[in-house]
Amino acid sequence: MTTNWKILNLKRKKDDDLITTITYECSVSNGTNYNRRIGNLEVDGNVTDEGFIPYNDLTEGIILGWLTEKLGTELMSSIEAELINEVNEMEVQRNNNPFKRGVPWNGIKDGIDE
Image 1 (cartoon, rainbow, N blue to C red):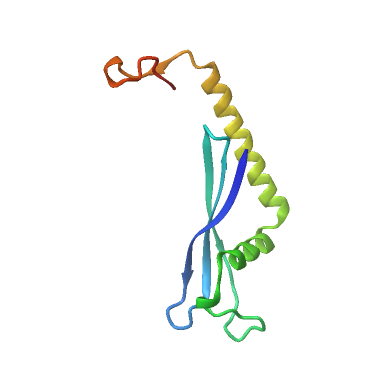
Image 2 (tube, rainbow, N blue to C red):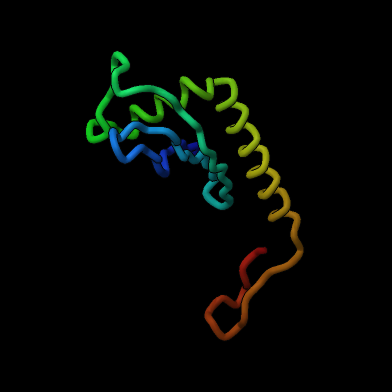
């Protein structure tokens, strides 16, 4: 099972490039099944704050650090666990599904499991 967090987008103010919203994704895959959650996190701050990082100096790693700090490891672990459970359920349903899809003239004579 593979779990991945990534930053999809950053919303920022035009006048000073201050980040206001982080759009993130948590995805889980077992190689066959895939599921994800996309969320938005509002952040606050000021360009005069100590430790302010200019927009062009930001990295995904820095933003993921902010995300972890704001959401907390407990909530992030809960999101991951929920997605893992859903992917596991998809696998059970796929394994128990008695149907296949396909047509015999496209080279997939055995069909594709639903």
